Amino acid sequence: DGDGRVLSYDEIVRACFALGHALKRGTRHDEKIGVLLPTGVGAAIAFLALSAFGRVPAMLNFTSSHGDLQSAISTAEVKRVVTAHRFIELGKLEDVAAAIGQVAELVYLEDVRAGLSLSDKLTALAGSLAPGLVASKAGDQEPASIRFASGTEGQPKGVALSHRNLLANIAQVRAHIDLYDDDVLFNPLPVFHCFGLTVGMLLPLIAGVKVVCHPTPLQPREIVRRIREMGATILLSTDTFITQYARAGEPGDLGSLRLAVCGAERVRDETRTLLRRKYGMEILEGYGVTEAAPVVAANQIEANRPGTVGHLMAGMEARLEPVEGIPNAGLLVVKGPNVMLGYIRPDAPGRIVAPEGGWYDTGDVASIDEDGFIAIRGRIKRFAKIGGETVSLAVVENIAAAVWPDNHHAAVTIPDRAKGEQIVL
Image (cartoon, rainbow, N blue to C red; front, side, top):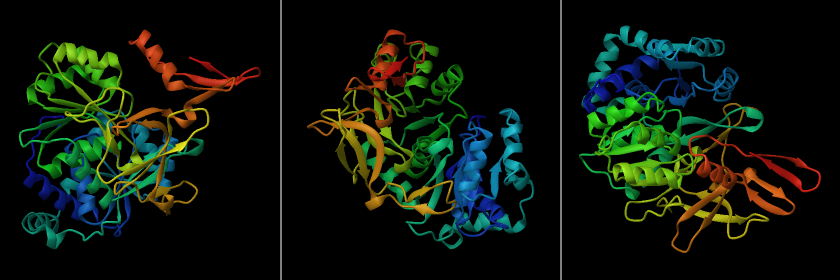
């Protein structure tokens, strides 16, 4: 954990059954319970504790606006939110807690731990000896977690993921990327994001791999120090963050890493060059969406093609639907065992609407070459029409980033009488 605590599997199992037995009081089976915690042992235990007794963790983004948090809680029909006094104090999130308190009951882990009953402790003992007799029997297609994605008019919509979705994606990643018994996975990504929870926390616990948690990706020097001290071999990151870590460290600081898996944004050539030159390390770029639990495609050590996001996960299908003005590419639509149960929309709280035919429209324009490598061209909504020509705003941003790598860039469109639209950088 971020504070140096080390827990064994047995300790985590006992804690999950004790906490879960205490948290289930006053709630019903399948009830959605909010989780507002940073990446760490507390979040892992809270998630698994709720799951063990048939409650559904709804992962809340503590960086969201108060309005979005309240909307997410309403959409998922959350009545209780699990958090921690220490997290609220260290994160200076008193105003966030106050906003949540207006629409749901806040339950603090420290208070629950202090009030554990004899029954809770006996359940922990029984659960560690015979978990099958204590844990709730969930069907594979029942909701296992609710995440939130941006929705229309700024209101987040819930993404309902089943137990099958999560376990399938974990199995897909394990089949795609080799994990070894002596691997140590370093996860600084937030657990309210699918990548940080599914790949960064659930996968190592299920695969039997050590995981080192860090509560925020925004501490490059501290993260570099912990990677070195823990001998981490796998790092989960994004292009923006790993660039910061590479610059903060000295040659050798990241020497234990054999693998860095990056998603959420395009990995720039400059980033690859920096990591290769300074640390002799390669980056595997992947692609995912919350609606697919989240990993859809990824490069591999033996099949790593820069500029692409690699091959599709096992068991998935993909098709490209034509987009006017964009040759040799199309709208990426995917299907597979990891694709969500469906959306929960703000105008219909609690109701899960399944994707038609099991196919999910990613909203991304992609191309797939003859070897099966997928290249993401950009969001369908992020293409401009200028005098009949289709121009990717992502390409404009990438060119600017190559010229000015130390700055962040955004390209937007505005109406233009003569050419239909123009791009402003």
